[in-house]
Image (cartoon, rainbow, N blue to C red; front, side, top):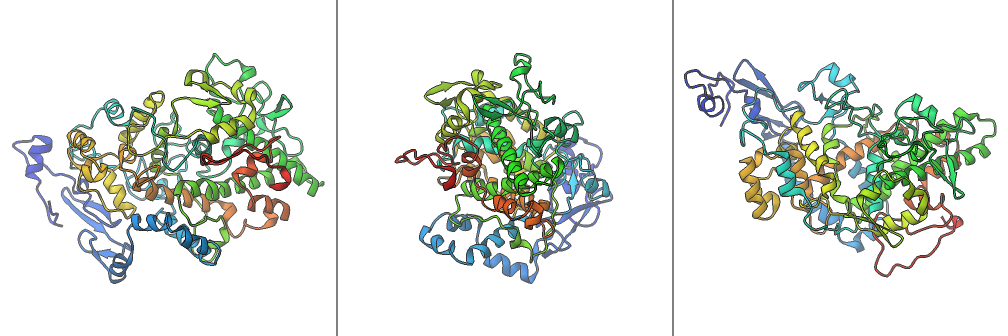
Length: 591
């Protein structure tokens, strides 16, 4: 239906949507999402609208006519799939590029192109679907990339699709639940899966007591709050208050997080776990899985190791300065490992990613970040979890794995790292790969997205410069699932955001589909590079206690995080070992 600026009467819509036979109803025209290319729909009167096309590079009634340079850009710009293919193939070419200045030039392009897709300052939140000071200043909310679906729309996701959305339980059971475990073809392992969960839960902290759309992660980024706590009181309870270190306990000659008896912080353990077995960690939910406790232990050891180094360099420093400087180093190490190990593996790029904040110093860039609801929804990667866990020749099932802190101390860090690095994780995209143990979580994400009124999946594709899908078969790449989805949703433009991300056809040999990469990468890179330590004011040796601390940040790797904090160096990677791999122990001097 075409819109005009003058009084439109939606008589057909009236019967179809509201069943008012003898009156003329006025449908909110913004429910049709008429404004394209990031234009903003503003409603006037009862049935008129206007598209604000300011600085979109387009003009016209619906922001569909490209300006000259936008037209040139559209003609020359390769599709995301072409770019992905080039970046993930041609090893010989990338071997050359990675040794030249072109690597830094391309890295700069990757960072700026991706990060520029995220609005800064933030725009909307779950209370406000228009720009205002409260949406900008109230950091207790997650931000929103797109405003909520207008409340007066005739259908749940606007003006298309069914009058009622499908039952979340039906969606999970029919399309998401695992039939047989499907390993990720990229070779992703459980070491990656647990890192993803551990890392992201410093900023994905929905404040359920306040309501949906609220967060307890008020730093909105990488602040290492999952190590140090999200409040000063929690931090002080976890600190040793000597030499900048964190409290710890020694078991079998090895350092582990303290129990809640020694560090009285609130942790989410069931009553069946006695206090002497409850580990005290910065994030209150990390007692759930031994893989999360493993990373908590590694970062605890790394923090205390760095404190010892700084104390030697700065004997006049007190506890507070040692702690605060070490925290900055840990944040720097985290960002480097995320970009150079984690994102490198996830992307499959042959371009060797490089963490160098100075690459952005010549470009306009805002060193701030606000975590978005959509990023939180997107990052529910539960298909990664296996059917059971294989450690040192033993198979452990979920009832014995969950909340079992003794697994960490019984096997030790080395054996757990070795086991988690060797065991494949599941493929995230393509559907039918969620273990039943997390089905309630998946259902909850769908329910949450509806209560938050997230816009349809295709609207998000357009927002991230992707072509909207025109049919369910194009979306899934097959016919059976496409037919079932069409029955439930009625129209491809009414498909929901989170189910679509998990059900979209995957790229060949990849962990998930196009949308997860093209939407997730901008959120991730903006959050990482928008950290204060990456700014020109912070990114210098003195911030990290001098050259030694700066070198620790600039040389951080996943392997060093593990092997500098263990007695022997196990196989450690985000990728399962090659078939011909033979264990070789690495000494600390070789790292």
